[in-house]
Image 1 (tube, rainbow, N blue to C red):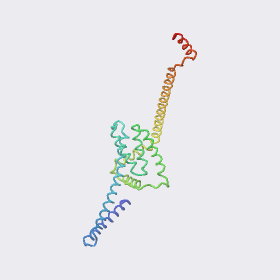
Image 2: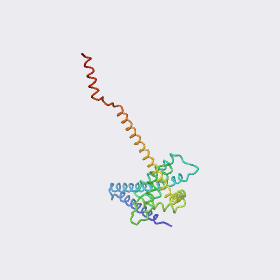
Image 3: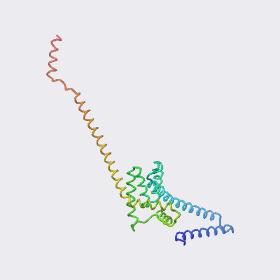
Image 4: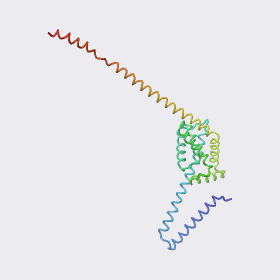
Length: 246
């Protein structure tokens, strides 16, 4: 049974084929200028390239899900640090692909940040994931074309048994999202708070030490200054020296 998306794709393919055939026929019989054929061909090529680029961008998201799930589910077989870094870089690209990335992608990226101790990045992404999870059910939010394309592709994958690896990764990440998102966010917020408090405490200690050092230096410099002798002693010394001069 042909789905609605496949029907649309079939209609587009038929329309393109008919259009190309029509222009070719006109070109053969000499009733269409060469530049018309060239413009049509270039337009068709450019539109095809844009469609291919959009499809690849969507596929990057699902490949990221598979890689992130492998890292986050690794218990005994801990991946190398550079492997996690590579997956994180892919996740950072994913959340930049659209103005309204799906909450699952932000959760996966936030969980990866948390796994390497990047509490600032984890809090940012997990917090945004929580916000977008609420906003996705709002009737006042208009989804972007990229998000619509992602959702359409997601539904296709869900209906395709042969995409088992992607389906398994999505199900696993969604379960983690439900069960661990709030706890991960709270833990990373607490760790970030401790880091800020430790930094403030260290800074305060440094300022106190600096002030104490300045106070000691000031007291030493004051002690090194000797007061001049009284004027009576100076005059007495002068009068005692005058008889000796005669």
